[in-house]
Length: 409
Image 1 (cartoon, helix red, strand yellow):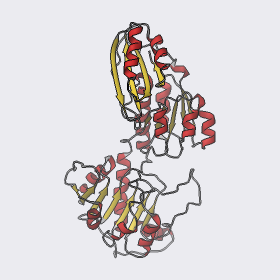
Image 2: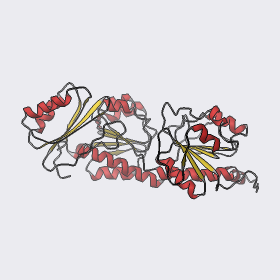
Image 3: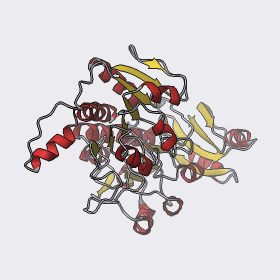
Image 4: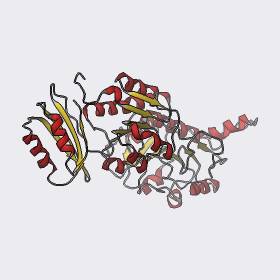
């Protein structure tokens, strides 16, 4: 971008936590921004103390961006979640403070899908048990309870980006694929939609969960749902730890009804790599436990670093919020010679009238104007072709309805 910005790029500060992939830091530095890159997460008190001068905060899944953190970010423009989930961020508070949150909904899709397929094969062949036995010096060459996955049925709960990829890969293994989603979805290939979760559970040899964390998905797989699965079927969860009632899953495996499980997420997860992880599933037969690594491949982390940093850079440079999880979506091409004003305001009647009156009073000509709203806020992008934009920006910022006002160039 060739425009002179109202706030020098060299003064924009980026705080990256949790060992976000270096490609993100490189992208920010290439724009001329200041970058502080830390390996670990920060507790709330320390993050509150450090975020005051940051314009952008980049995190992964362990950092909790609480209302206190957002309130302390007096210069905070945006938060980037270098992962899929954003439940660790108080997105509503960020919305009310005019802070869009961006994530990476696509970049680790393949990595998670491949892990699920690998685990389906491992569970079907009981490879976890056989590998552990050989490591312990026991030779147990048996075929009992070991099966091919070809011809078996995998049931996908949540048919989004990852679920559809699992379905495509499973069919390549010769599996039948059924899925259930609360929203009507177009089936990929020969994947078949089921009318209810119960119907899916009844026919699936493998049930894999790919749903977000919401009040509706909390404990959605408990004792009643496990009892509706086919005897000997296996459950896989790489979505959110709150989706499955772990104690009931453990009891069902111990009782011999559920044939196995692969679990990557847990209701309570350690904040840092350490020993001493506890779970009722530890030590159970044909159970694969992994430490939340579904998207932890070098390819996925690099892709996430590129995706989220690109969204954040575009927002800083142009105000575009396409893809934000908590914010009205706006994007507009940059007009040569125009002055761009961005305004976040309370979504109440009369705001646009007041803003246009200010523009008229300053005898400015509007080159482009886009307004998008959600139930609580409105986001206005306005390009002016007159050198009165600083005065317009100041007057708009002084409106009692304004939350945050920024001039870009």
